[in-house]
Length: 79
Image (tube, rainbow, N blue to C red; front, top):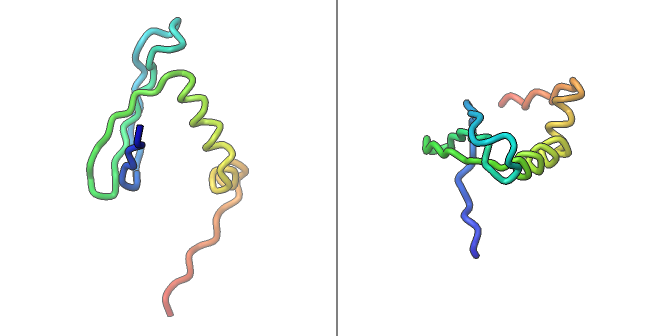
């Protein structure tokens, strides 16, 4: 199956809990994601998918900097 590449996601303004907590295969988190072009996607995540996403995000260097309290350098201003 060919993966579908979404446009750049620029915001994740909401997440809702859904499903049955006792069933580890049921989607329980639905994340709202908005793209650069303004399209809104709702993505249901299973417990396993949410855990995998959390691990990937926690190991992403920009997120590690944010979680450790280090601020990223300001972008250079045009002169």
